[in-house]
Amino acid sequence: MPPQEDIVSIRGLTKRYAGKVPVEAVRNIDLTVTRGELFGLLGPNGAGKSTTISVCTTRTLPTSGTVEIAGLDVVATPAQARKHMGVVPQYNTLDRQCTVWENLYFHCRYFGYTSTAAAKRANELLEMFRLTERSKSFVRELSGGLAQRVQIARAIAHQPEILFLDEPSAGLDPQSRLALWDSIRQLLSQGITIVLTTHYMEEADELCNRVAIIDHGKILVCDTPENLKRSVGAQKVINLHLADGDPQLQQTLSQLPAVKSVETNKDGVRIFVDNLDGLLPRLIEVTGPKLKDISVTETTLETVFIKLTGRDLRE
Image (tube, rainbow, N blue to C red):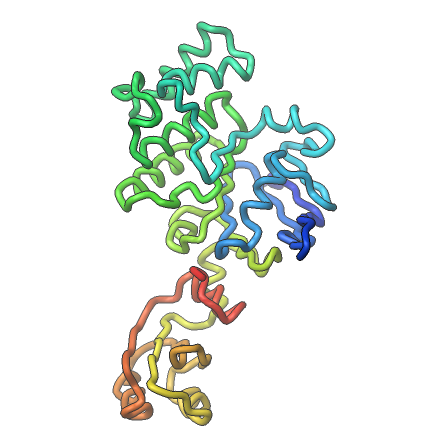
């Protein structure tokens, strides 16, 4: 089987913002994305996800390092690189003075389509994204979910090889989020490479072939969701909310059967276990009156993040 070709190549990328307190948003990161995959950048707000995407899509200049899209340096040849990519930023950038159809049509015209070809492509996209009935609607009349579908349709109107989605489901209701996921899967099946940023763990777990977890501008890990969850070495996580701390409790809990590791947090302790067989009664017995609440969850990508940083992914 021939080796897969990289469509995104990031080498030593660093981005600093000047000011009274200079901020290093991205710190010397290396990443590659292969053609045809759905790659996710997962991390909390302010981790460096959007900055990385902004450099990749030529909206921000790097302080140092290189980024190549389809073999083109985004700093040296930004106009040529943009022809190969579609971009959906965090915020609605549709032209509010135009209808849905006009937003698609004029985007095609901008990328060199003739009037006839642009009209044909706009109609194809309306049908593909189930927007035909809203073709004459203005952007201000659309719900958040519909507007996001129009943004994605516009982003792929010129048939790019790669699509960048920056937190595409932020602010959407559950139904709109599921519809968006279906649209993303459809695009992936058509051979479009997709890079998305998100702070929703379930979104990355559900959609992505590979995930890089980023925090404070650094890549912590990069692998498939399954491999990352397997790396934790535990199947379940038990959170104990305690009335007060006990220096000896962590050691006592770590000696219980099936317990892989124990970590303290601001509310009590977090326990990583292989199974729950007979464990919950023992936990209640050991913690006694100090125990205020107990919860059990499956190992998730958030679990991986917590193991790496010791803090909640949603902070």
